[in-house]
Amino acid sequence: MYGAIIGDIVGSRFEFDRGPWTKEFEFFTPGNDWTDDTVMTLAIGEALMSCARDADEATIKSACIRSMKKWGKKYPCAGYGGRFFKWVLSDDSQPYGSWGNGSAMRVSAAGILYDTLERTREVARMTAEVTHNHPEGIKGAECTAAVMFLARTGKSKEEIKVYVVKEFGYDISYTVDEMRPFHKHNESCMDALPKALISFFEGVSFEDVIRNAVSLGGDTDTIAAIAGAMAEAFYGVPDEMKKRCRAYLEDDMVKVVERFIS
Image 1 (cartoon, rainbow, N blue to C red):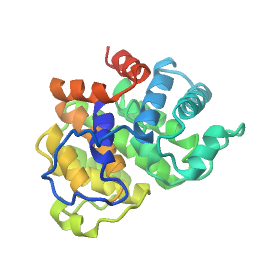
Image 2: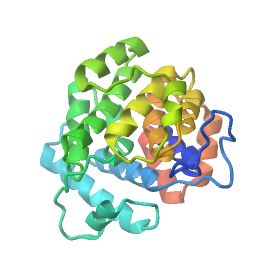
Image 3: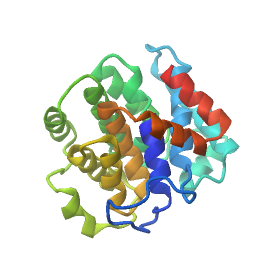
């Protein structure tokens, strides 16, 4: 969970394609802050922790809906997309067919909590489908969680890459340097997942993965949140970065993170 939140915070000041288009930038500054990516990562984390590991689909989806709406209403100015925030405020909880990258940026808890790859993907799909029930929205969430599961269970990056291409079909044949000139703000899973994946595969440390993702420009906070979740599962997060991260968060947010990692 720290990985996604740190990625969000570090990428936040460059969102909407405000740069930096380089890996050389100050990591934590007063201009950084958490966004909707952090709020919804926490919401899904809290929801999944409230359910038994073998809970059925209806239970998990109900918990996700309740938690997302609760956290969204508590922090209404976090930068949500228009359709999503309308869903948060509505009494109607039906999904709306989104293929946006929100399904992937919030899913990291599912990548950690479960004992099999099959269950990890199943729960990731459930967390997506409550809003992002388009096939691309579901695929983005499943891919992110699957990479996390494989990374934390000892698979090499090459093994993970083979699985991603076979199961999800994303084009990850480019390098970060090759992708960087094509920066643009695009909030789809189809854009975010290849960028996050390439940032992860090319990175040599947790911090380097985040720097790769932010350097691509575009929707930097979300790309870095997705890549950061993958990087945490593979490398872990340095304690000093965790401490710096907590300094940005509200007390209720810290409580969820601490409960999750305990």
